[in-house]
Length: 77
Image (cartoon, rainbow, N blue to C red; front, top):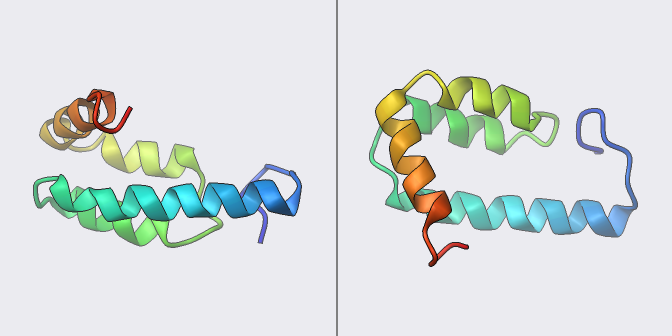
């Protein structure tokens, strides 16, 4: 299934899905939060776009702060 509003070659979609799985595996380092649960559920749905996930992340400032620290760390580059 193509990503919402994005049309690209199947090989690129496979790469995007693989990267999405890698990100989901890293989520275990995040503190527990109802927001984290919602994000995990949304991220499993290939029809959900970044905007929907960003809207959920924006609901919890502490979670957003921790997520940004992890995303900006040299380890995850």
